[in-house]
Each structure stands twice: as C-alpha cells, then as structure tokens.
Image (cartoon, rainbow, N blue to C red; front, side, top):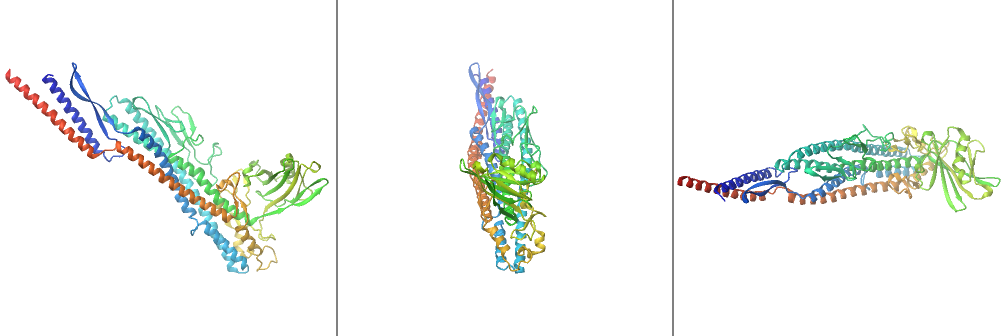
Length: 622
C-alpha cells in the first residue's frame, strides 16, 4: 500500500468517525423524544486495485424489533378499546350507584315501597299519603336523571367518534405524505431514518384509534388495511367520513338503512371514489373507535332499556288490569268471551290454546295498534318468548277488529265473533276437536283514579297514560324513564291513594295493599333487550328483583371493563418495555460508543500525521 493509499484510508476513517459521532450526538439529544428509534451505522470496506484502502458508511440502521412493533400496535388498539370502555363504565357506575349503597335507584325504589307499606297500615293518615307522593316524585326524578345521564354519555360517544375520525384522517394523510418523501429518497441515510420514525409515530397513533394491519412493500413503502381486510392506504390515502348528529335521544339508533338511522355512521371513501360503511361491514373491531361504537350502540342502549323497563313496569303494574274471559258454548263449539271495550293502544288480548294433535300449547297476543304504519308487529313486541304477536288496527270498529282477528287465528282452526256490543268471543273448531281454547283474557290500562278497583294511573308519560303503545316512531317504553312522572291529579288529591270509588272509607287499605303487592310481589316478564335474561328465557320476577339484577349487572360490567383495562395495560407495558429495550437510547451505551469513536478518530489522525511526516522526509531527500 502506498503512502497515498494510507492517507486516503485515514481520511475515510476520519469521515466515518465524524458521521458516527454525529449519529451518537443525535441519539443522545433525542433520548427522551417520543417515537425516536436509536440509530447505528453499517460500515463497509472500500477497495481499489484489489487492495482494501478505506471505509465508508453503507447505511443508517434503526434498531427495532419489527415483530414486537407489530404486536405492540395490536395491543395499542386493545388497550385503547379497554380504556374507552372502562372510562364510560366508571361514569355509568356513578349513575347507577353500587348495589346496597344510598342514593341509588334501588334505595329510591325501596323508599317508595316502604312509604306504600306504611300507608297500607294507616290509609287515613294524611302524612303517610304525602310521604308516598314525595317518595314517588323523588324516584321519578332519579329515573329522569339516570336516563338523561345515559343519553348524555351516548352523545359523548358520538362526539368521540367524530374526533377520532378526524384524527384517523390526519394520520393517514401524514403517512401518505411521508411515504412519498421516503420513496423519493434513494439513500438509506439518517434523513430517511428520521422520516421512517415520523411515519411509525403516525402509524402508532392510528393503531390506537382502530385495529390495523401494516404491510411493507418496495422502497420502504407501507400499505395499511383494517384487520378485516379493507384498505385504508395504498399509493394514496382513503378518507373517513362521519355524519355526526347534533344531539341524540333514547330513540336514536344506528341502522344499515340510512333512512332509518338516527346516529352517525362511518363511511370510508377511497381515492377512486368508492365507499363502504365501516360499521355495517364490521371493519372496526378494536381501538378507541370500536369502544365508542360499542358504548353508543350496545352497552348504553342496553342500560337505557333497563331503566326504561323499570319505569314501564312500575307504571303498568299499577295501571294495567287483566280480566279473564267467561266460558261460552255455541253448538258443538266452546271457548271464552271477554269485553274488549276501552282498550288503549298497546293493550292486548291473549288467547291460549292447545293443538290436540301434538298436545302443544300456544299463545297468541293481539295488540291494539292505532298507527297502521307500525304494522305488522314482530313477535318481540312482547317480552313473552313463546307467543305469536299480531297487531290489530281498531280504527274500523268491531267488524274490522273481528275480521283481523279471524285472519290471525284462521290457521289454528279457532273462530272469532262479536255477539254484541264490544264483546269478543273465541271458539274452538267444534266437532273437529283439533284445537282446544284454554284461556282468553284482556289487559286494559285504567286511566281514571276512581275506577272502582285498586288499579290507577299512578305514573304517567308526561301528561298521558302509559300504555306501551307502538307507533312507526317506536315503542312508548323507549325513553320512558326520562319522561315518567307522578300523575298530577294524584298530587293534587292524595286521597285518591285510598279512595278508589265513591263512598270508600278513608281507612280502607284495599288500594294501598294492591299497590304495595304489585310493586313488591307481582311477577312480571322483562324484555331480553334489557340484557337481563335471554331471548328464549326472558327474566321473570318482581320489579325489585329486576332492579337489583340490573344494578348487579352494571356493577359486574364495570368490574369486567376495569379488569380488561388492567390486563391490557400489563400486556401493553410489557411489550413496550421489550420494544424499548431494543429501540430506545441507552445513554451509557452511547457514551461507550463515544469513547470508541474518539479512540478511532485519534488513531486515524495519528496515521495522517505519520504519513505527513513521511511525505516531508521524502520531500527533503529529493
């Protein structure tokens, strides 16, 4: 090797040392910078005429474990999802309260029934009557506030989705821009490595918002998909659109039919103009957005259903009167007759019969519907899992009602008729003896305070009776907890808590006993929509038991959400530590590298000095 080659080699060594020193300085300076990945250089020998004569930097490498990074992004989505659920359930638990504690719906309900019990022992006590009204008003206010709080949380979830969609679009745009800059860079240098850090940072942000899959292609480019396979970013970025609603009501629901949906939906618009509804397709399965969607469209809707069911059960238990039909015969046919006059929308007629060929019992529920556009009704219109529900339009009078009922029961072999007035008669098939009518009953809502029986419209829907009516807009029960109030006529005249008819003694306990028994002992069936019980085995029990079940379920869900969050945090922190062990800057390690570079720099400088001296000697000899 000539002196010139030695000098060139020493200079190349100095250049590499200087570049490496700059990289160490950058590592140290960014030791606490979020998203910064430690960088190192790859050195290769350079050769001339078959002889190694120097060194150069071939690439700047980022020190990271790509497998751990991939897993970290998966857990980022899971942790954000769990955190979102936990935060909402903490708020929901504050609304429902913990079972057994004061100032909860359960304690308010118990105060009300206790006041009724006291009234039943002293029905002539004006103070006892006043206590019942006061406790009832306090309970309805609790229900109103609970419903409002749940609805507010659904509105917050809607706003949360809107904000998250904006963040997704910003992240996708930044990733697309960085993709373009990285593609235009032909060198694997520190500038490119910094761009890769920035892109990873935006991808990490995106992974917290929704579950994604990142695919690396040529020239350090990335394509991004949802885990369900829908592309979010290719050469260009797609954009998400969210039609946020200004305010939500308990009736606000998401639907795949845009004309039926009253909450926002997320639509992905591709660079080519194509679109897909990400909610309908189930594309978002984890991340912050998935948490918001679950709370808005499932968990909070279910919580609303529970408080609505409690309010509806309270109203119906006190105002609904069920009357069994009287047995009748007509020739070879037998069955029952019942008066259906005075039925309100939402009231029902129940027919029980047995198919003797299979010995199978059946129930048909005929529900009065005053809004024909709501027809036909689904079997889920009642909580009974085993009945067939048929909506009957009463607007055409008894002939039309009977005709509709005959159409509904024709397949069974039974027949309906109207012998007189508002009487409905249901008979079996007579000589055929294939079907046996077992029972016939009608349930009506009592709308007056002096109807001659214990039933009364204690609770009302604003100023209207609660009947469970179904219209095209939905069921009256939806959101009822937010509207329930004590009948103003009862507040004005508390004596009606006892006087169910003219001439009833002030000390008569008939009505107070009825109210107490209905609210504490009457067995009721609750809709599976509440989440308590299933579609095939809906929960049946007292209002007290259902209320306690609902509170326990909310408490269990809150604990489950908290446990999920804690578990996800442990996994995420563990993966983050593994990632940091490789990728974060270790100051001690950098100082060690600095000493090595200092020694290398000094050695190369010494070589240059020695070569210079040798050149000087040669010059003097010439």
